Length: 356
Image (tube, rainbow, N blue to C red; front, side, top):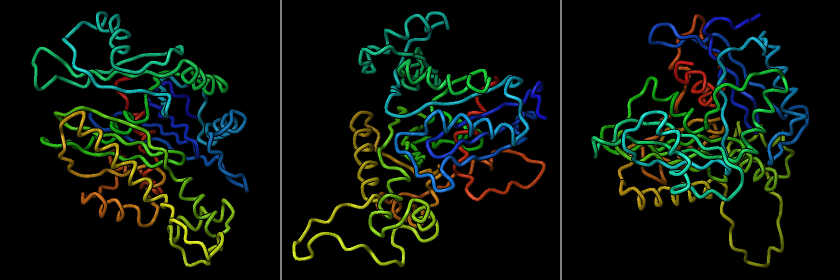
């Protein structure tokens, strides 16, 4: 059993479609993989819940995952997990250099200036990204806010199986953390990160000199599955299989829809909707930041294996596509065999999170 009294670090990504866990250890400047596993939440005929897994589904799955890896929850000393979604707000600002105590005392005031807080009970935090390249007396600060309900609900999931919550990060920063351990940002321009999940796609834009921006887009893997279900009369499990193996234009007969004598306006596909959402977000970023040089797109997340997605994005935005395999950042005593390594980026980034 993994007692974890050593310096092993645990990264836990509780997603809407699956739970991912990674245990790593730091060996000098490198990280070594100890254990990892993915637990699918929707198997055996159970359909995906677009609202996210109920506690009655997620908690037993988390307990089973721990048991299968031989991990004793009470003995975990270094745990990092994350939250995301529409109830998480992020904004980069520039701030004068302050002590940690001064920054902590002023952070709520700064958040109220820059983040639209809706009056609900809110948890606010910050992370210093580095020096402001345009002003040597200032630093780049990332303000992060979420509702207390979301934050405490996430912690309740963990406490249900005797896990001490530890660090709670946000999905987009965990992904960037895993990427930047072994990759460099360009000196000029910014990189687009797309984390394609089941319920949503996390878009982040980041550069060495330019403003950090992140936004959750409403199109994810389930939208593609639902499109196949509707167009071809497939069950959830059948559509998932077709999506993985054939993509969005399978060799199957479509269901006849409506009165063929009426000329209907063709509805956009899920792929096109995602492309439009990305385009609108990038236009907003250019308007707000003044930066319009996008160097390439980094794709990761459980949905990136959708056949044709990388080609579509390359054609639409005329940018190189990089499929980011986070396991490449880790050493391992044995070969890492994973059908979809891209879905592990957030969990690995969490496990790498600082000197816990």
